[in-house]
Image (cartoon, rainbow, N blue to C red; front, side, top):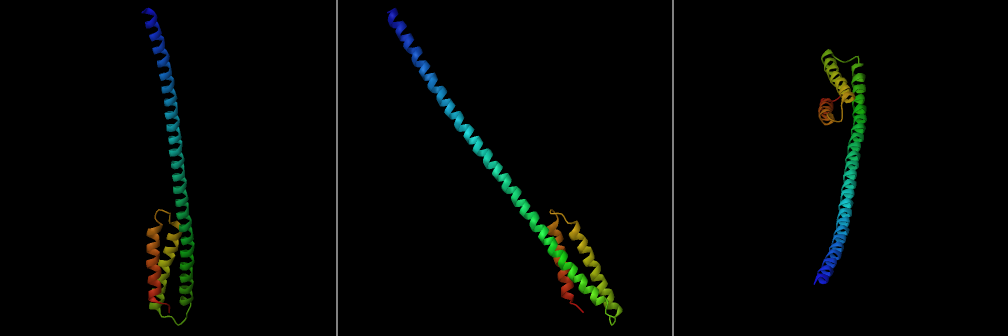
Length: 140
């Protein structure tokens, strides 16, 4: 009976060792899967950050191009106004009106230079309004 008990205990210990070994292997596989998932999530997060940075850089480039365009448009309007102001047949009232328009455009030119990417949309709205106002009044 003691022999059977010893044999039974030895068998139980051996089986528990196999079960623990399998459990350790299973845990290792689970850990490897979890590490792979974390690495995948980290990669996705890095890619999302890169995409966000690229999108923001594209926006900054678009703002820079628009600023160049508006500078040119404003300068063209200023040049036209300066030519009109040189007209010797210009009456005083019309000259005052042209100078007032010129002052607005000079302020707009300053706004373009000082505009940041954060306030560009508001500045652009003002510029569009002022430029269309100058064009609606027509040239003399």
